[in-house]
Length: 223
Image (cartoon, rainbow, N blue to C red; front, side, top):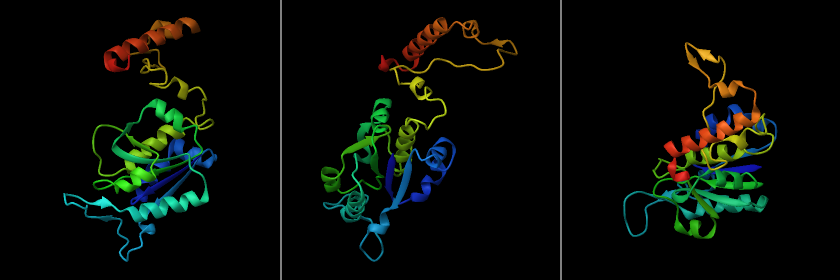
């Protein structure tokens, strides 16, 4: 998979993409992440990418020309399966959406800023708008990093245990059951006996029951 991210703050991705699973995924060739400084595609002397909105109002708007120039350059080099805009009024990111995106080959993520981007970009060039929650951030970089992370970990070969992602919260419409590890008894706090029994079917049944109960308690809207 190749992910191209259009941003005015590419340095914000240095931490999220240069550590842990995402770093190893790039090193192994499972994913390519390319950052594009939007200001490089501005044609004005000061490399401005924002301007005051027509009709007045507070805030600034990302200009159509630099965004168009960047998208057109990328599209001239390869075919993209999705051009995503990070927006608070987009479709809410969930596990199903991450699963679907992980099956694609090339995607662009445009990081929103200010009061948003010129609507003509949204109407004519964006194929999907995604929100990570019902709140507003200072920019779309953190949202883009979250979208990329949620997708990359699902690509075959990225995780050491191929079945790990399949047992994550939300994959089966439930949150994950409680988990434990050694020691089995820590200062009188004991692991449930069923997990030590070695009886796989009974353990799986217990995990499912726990997942259902925890979902009822913590995320009842999912049931």
